[in-house]
Image (cartoon, rainbow, N blue to C red):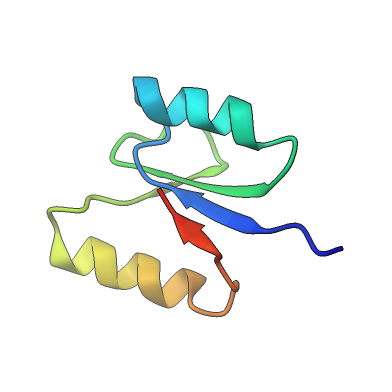
Length: 68
């Protein structure tokens, strides 16, 4: 069975980091945050229209099942 993909916004924050830890064993998680602590976190500022547009275009073909 194909693993579902979840995009987590605010992945470097308190809730996002705990969601990442809880979901990563059962789902493929895609991490986004305004602060990039490592190479696997994509930059996303939800208050910046250009940033949101770039993120949407980047992940458009990924088949994301949920956004948190």
